[in-house]
Image 1: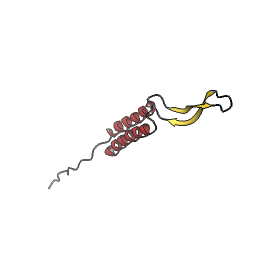
Image 2: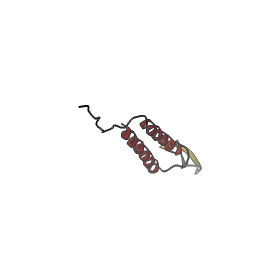
Image 3: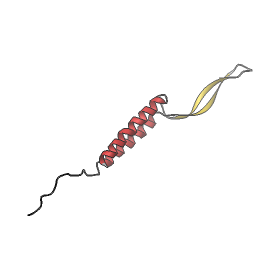
Image 4: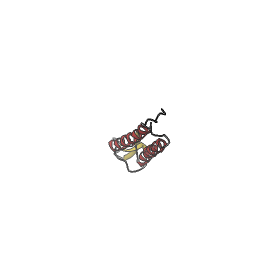
Length: 90
């Protein structure tokens, strides 16, 4: 259990960093709406509309690292199994 929690913590951090990098490595806050510039075909005026898209930011990484720290901390609550045999009285 102890090793399992630590492995899960490492996997969570690596997966979060990989997803964050693949999604654009946004160094700001997480965004759910992205501004998109559009040009009106008739008037030629530029405008901005918003498109729904999830872009993880540094707060996404902070939550992942926090989760990993908690999982690692919980792993210290478990004892390691001892393989030593107790001597028997004869």
